Structure formats: C-alpha cells, structure tokens
Length: 628
Image (cartoon, rainbow, N blue to C red; front, side, top):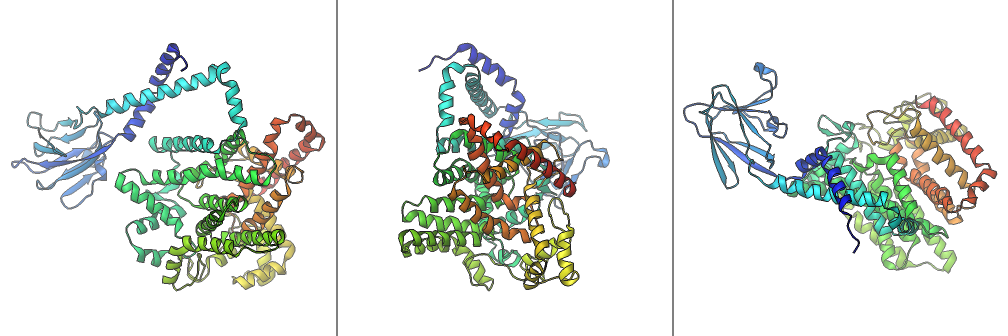
C-alpha cells in the first residue's frame, strides 16, 4: 500500500473548503424532502398568513382554491409573496428539504396558534408573545443532523478527489508510464464508466445549479419536440392510451414516449427529478456509443485496434459540438445509437444471438426515426447478399431471427398501428398524421415547405432560391403531392443536385452545441474547429488509410440514412449519423497519426495543408452567404 502524503491531504482539504458554495448547493439538492402540514388551532382569530421569505420554501407553488389566496409581491405593499389561508379548517401542506436553515415565515396578523405536523412529530407555534404585525420565523429542522452528515460526507469525498487530482498532476514520476500505457491500451468498459461519469457529473451540475439552457423550456414546459415526447410519456405513465391514439403523430414510434414514461414513473415513485432521470438513461446509451460501439465498428472494419486516447478525443469532440443532447428530451441520438449498434452486431456476428439482437436494435432505431426503416432494410439486405456470394448459400435461420427481433420490439407499435386502422410493423405517414397540417402527409408538407420558405428550418428558418426555382419550373408555385414532387425533381435535375449539395453543406454547418439554442455561434472558433474536422475528413476519404470496408459502409449509410433526408428541411440534429461518420474518420485516421510522427511530413507533401486551408476559406465564404 502506497504511503499517503499528509501535507497533500491537508492541501486537498483546504481546497475543498474553498468550494464551500458548491458543496452547500450540492447538499441542498441531494438532501431528502419531507411533507409538513400547517393547521390552525386558534378559535379566536380567523386565518393564517405565510410569507415567502426563504427561496427554499415556495409557497407560491401551493394549490390555490376558495379558501387560499396567493398575494403576489407588491400587492397591498407586501415585500414578498404571501399566502392567505382564510378558513381555520383548511390545512396547508408543504414539501420542503430537511435543512437546518430552512424557515417558514408567519405574518402575525391573524390566528396565533399554529400546529405543525411532520410525520409523527407535532409542535404548536404560539405567536401571542410576538407583536402584532411582526414576521415570525420558524425553523422546522433546526435540530436535524442530516445537513451535517451530508456536508461532512461531501467534503470528505471532494477532498479525496482533489487529493487524487493533485497526485495525478504533480506526482508525475509515479504514474506517467502507467498513464501512457492506459491511453495506448483499449479498455472499452473502463472508458464507458469514465465517459458516463463525466457526462453524469456535468448534467447533474446543470440541474443542481439551475444552469440548463432556458431555451429548452417555454412557460415551464419543454420546448419543441421535447414537449410532445414528455407529454405522451405522461399519457403512457398514467394509462391514457386513448389520448395517445387521439393526439399522437403516426410517424413517431412508441419508443419516443416509452423512455420518458419510464423516467416519469421512476421519478414519481423515488421522488427524484424525472427529467434528470431521463438524461441518465439517455446518456448511458450515449456513453456506450462513444466508448464501445464506434470503436468496435472501427476494430471490425480496420486492421488497427482502437485506443483509449482516441475514445477520449472522440468524446471531447462530440461533447464540444453536441453537449445539448446530454440534457434534451430528444431521440435523434438514441436512434443513431441503436442503428450503429445493429451494424456492430452484424459486423461482429459470432452466434445466432447477435443476429437476433441486431433485429431488436434495428427495430428500436426505426421507432426513434422513421427514415431509418430503409437504412435497416438495405443494410440487412447487403449482409444477406454478401453471405450469398461468400458462402454460396443463404442462412434462412439468420433471416428468421433478424425479423423475429424486429417484430418482437415492434409489437407495441403494431398494436398502436392496428388501433389507428393501419396494418404494419413500423411508424407510418398519412394525411393528417401531423395535426397542425390536416390536409397533407408530414413528408409532403415538409418537402413543400423546403421548396418555399424553410430550406433550413429551426433555428434559422431560411429559404433558398434554387429550391424555389424547382417549384416554379414545374408548377408555378402550386403545392404538390408526392408523385408531383418526384416529378419536379426529375424535371429540374441540375437544380436538384445543387439543392442536395447545399443541404448537405448546411446540415454540416452547425452553429450551436445546443439542441434548442438561445443564440447561435457567429463565424468564430467554433466554426473553425468544425470546418477543420470536416476538411480533414474530406482529405482522408481519398487516402488509402480508409479501408474498403469503411468506404462501403460509409456509402451505404450516406445513401440510405443521409441522402433521403435532403429532400426535406434541414435541421442539424437530423444529420447526427453524418457527423459521427466524420468524427470517426477524423479520430481514427487523422488523430491516430500522433503515433507515427513521420506521417505528418508525408501529409504535407500530399498537399494536406493546402487542401484544408482552401477548404476552410471556402466553407467560411459559403456559410457567410447563408447563415448570417
């Protein structure tokens, strides 16, 4: 056992004490809540008035009725919110944290004997000894030891973490070689825990200190698609199946509200923030994606093995550009996780169970994003054809197991579809399926909009003259059905190709790392890093370091998962698979060159610096024209 440095321990404790504000906020968040009841015992005077003098006691959240009136700050010259209980027979219930500094403030102008009930404990507060009009503070948990226990425990844990950090930073001789060995090794399980813990700490910090972007909420409710998923999760949690059928969008699968329902159910029973719980579930799978799925796909397609430092860099790049998915209630990344997990199971097939799981994962992907249906079908068909040419036979049992997995995971969706009058495994689009547009299919609506007003949708909302020209050339601007839309694209093939290229560029020109941003990045460092990664990836696609298998899979994903989306509006999060493909090449092909320093000089000879310099300038010029 290594000797503990006493002076470093003292230093760690001192550092932890300087973080007292953060420790107090953390303890205030994690310490359990309890319910207390306030009951008026006085028969001589009528009513009770509470003042909101402590931000930890939100009397404004108490349900108002005929016997209870909320007096907002400023009314009747009140300097804080006040709650007036008019009826002596009315009990008031408060749910508050067990903190010794939490106080309930009584305005001594009404009844003067108040009974406070907390579990089996009862106490009567007598306000008679105070002057009329005084504010009397009562501390219900003045003798509670919980705050001390939680605080001391937090300081001890923080001191240990700081001590370890100091050892890592300053005692280099003892750990340097091991650190390098770890970074150069491949430990997906360890990397999963490291990434998941880092994401969880970051997200928990956002919740504890209330620093989540305000733009993900509007008027206290989730903004955008989040509101739909959360509301329908609530319907499922409360068993309101008829509401799901009545108000649901048929192109959204049940997975998109089953996970929110699970989070709300667990959160309700454990009395934990359900939104936070959802992020823990969602980020669990994101950590699997970054630490295991993508590196293992690389291992299957390349003759080199992924390394921990590459996984870390992949994680940092993803977090830099997509940290918003860590706390948004959305399913774009969830669908991408299971689509790529299906691909991994197909590539790494060892037994029949892998084929079955590939079907389940593919089914989940389609239930998160409907456009992945064709991707799943095409990829599995390619697998079957490949096995036919390789083995001169088709494995019927593999086909059966794959489809059994899909059918099994889609059973709830089959039931929903059937109750809506549709026979099918997957989500479907029909006229009126998107309630705000009762006369068109949602796909037709989005394509028509992209040819008119919203070439690039949220958060930019920009039109495009080339796309508008396709519509004018074909029908002088009339709204088109799907057959007419396809005909319009064929009628103007050059313009169509130009529009597709424009949309792919705009899809990659992300200006935010939030799913629902308050503000967009200007053409600054954020865009420079993005363009550098994209330009480097483009350079390496023509390089021999990208294997034939990687190119084939990349083409299949691009054709089946990316290209079909270009006929509709562009929203950056819809192209998460394309971004992951780019990060894959950048990390495993470019970053890996740190192991072979002579390769950098070779890149220079191949014109790498000239290429990326020119590409970045072009990207900035094009972007400044559109995203101003």
